[in-house]
Image (tube, rainbow, N blue to C red; front, side):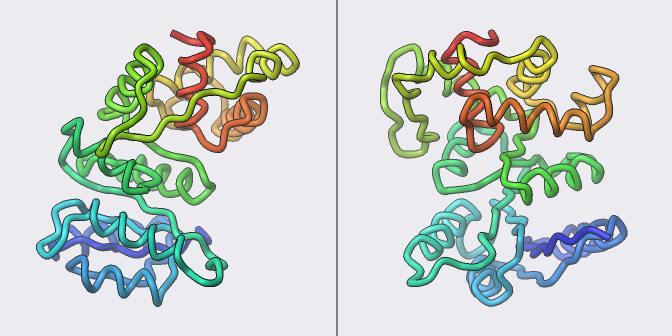
Length: 240
């Protein structure tokens, strides 16, 4: 049984019911649903789920604006919430501006609606663990932004992902904690947008072993999540 509490904010009834049924069958605890952004915000305030699945195309307010408002509410709260709700955007849109706007609004993960149910379950687990899950179909958008930012040194404008420069002592960190050959292989696949399951399949290792490698990579790169690790890997030249 998954100890992950989920809320669904999706305006299409059949889609919402189908996701709820599929997630419950996989052991997730679906604790609430909303068919629009207004009700969705209220639900997030009261239910305080571990992960909220948010559709972008909501009728009264798009999912990106809902995410921005909710994350701002979390930041403005007098007392930090005991559960820091993560937001997983679920959509059919892979437009560059939409993807970058979602992450700029504070989305933790981004998943296409045509994703398999197994991949959605993996995305929820990764997101709940505090890492970003980026659908391979749109990973190129985030990585292109990282490369572009590194190339021209330009700061992110609105509707882009905020990517901070690496620390001056970053080179020393890499020298002090070099990545193993296997960790570099895993890092390259992270940059390519692969999930833990996909990495395990490609390298013929278990998902548990992949998670261990990912944890070691994040620690060695002083990265908070997979996205930050990918950005730092590209900037440092660890991977191409």
